[in-house]
Image (cartoon, rainbow, N blue to C red; front, side):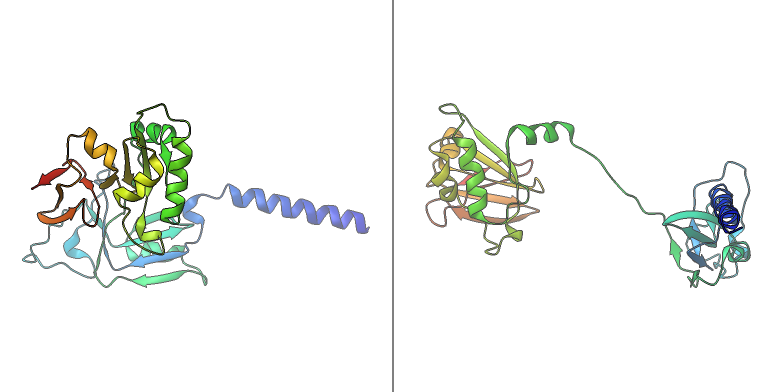
Length: 248
């Protein structure tokens, strides 16, 4: 009798689980429901329209806010971080249970966000060939990575790399050309910051670029000019898309 009851219970649990997996999305309850809002959506293919003037929150005709009837809904239901359904408040509240969090937008505007995942293919490939400085926790660690690459470099070969971020270091100090000179053994070297917006070079790289390391290097960024004297604080930088510019 006991074994029979156990089998019945197991079969019941299995059937309920399978049934739940195949429930239509509309019959599942939402985690969060946003109501009484102005939620943008692309034009619907079925030509169903919603008159914004008749929304509970109302939008004055002289507000200057465009409100095409096909572009907005007033409520949105979310399940497991994904949009479950959109429509009017009454319809969306049918997807509510005692665990659902209901947020009254009080007429506020909602725009779907973007998750921009992209890759610069060439840059990604070069990162595998050059010195990877992503995640370095200090200038010393950056220098260790560079020195390791120098050991296998041919005479006069450029040493390139990317990924350092001085804001992650305890010192939070930008690297200098002399910091690079100490570990590059005369090889010209250039290392781009993690965001790709600035880079730091050594003395050999300046000479290879026909720039005297005693000339002041001007870094132009968004209309602001800051100068770094190679013979003074010894920093030499290049701005993205602008190269290095010298000032006597």
